[in-house]
Length: 314
Image (tube, rainbow, N blue to C red):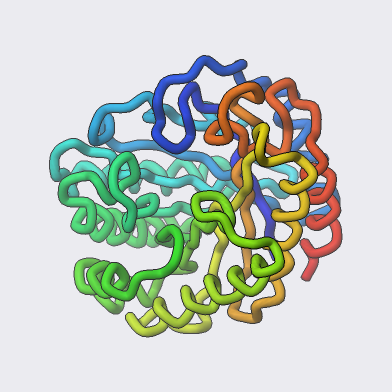
């Protein structure tokens, strides 16, 4: 199992991407936390986001996060670079060039993976709200495979979706991308936030997570993704605020992780969203961090570090 985390800071609400003044990223403190979480794990993903276009509508979240991934790679840390399609006009050719550059960057940073598109099944401000998004992801995947072969580099290529898997979405993706190409991806990713957007009684949480991940495997298999293709949990987390206390964050993250890892459906990577709160005095939409905005740890930080130490070699 390879674990990872998004270490970036966005000057915006993380859900609606409305502007928000936040303390700046501290690269030294960020690197120290990444090293601490990684521990003795041989490999660890650092998730990063790059955006093609200015969004639909234009929003404050269209910034590279983190701005300098090269500060955090090395020592077994690999870059998970998400190439987001945020064009206000259909531009599959432009996105294909953008993805080629993403493959080159990840290769230059020592390897890792490139996710083509982000939550294509979700409306704006996610990629599903951009004109020509399916065609752009199809062009981006073709470009990613071609660039990897041209360079002969070790970069994994995948796609993802969010929430409960929808067969109609995955059928459309397979039809647009091409069944053979979709079957060739190195992984399929799932952004999953149980108990965040729709509350779940905590005694039902583990069972709900098991259903979520098993359903994802069933749906992707129906459209031709081999059951041997690894599943990556590309984002998961649980925020804190006055009604969501830090002790419960720890409990939820532990429960969700153990349910996913026990599912037996081929999950090989598990990435948390994210390392640090944007603002620890703001609403829950800016408080997904394992650390508070001053880089002090919440209880969940220690739990995740223990989980990584215990399960990273499995």
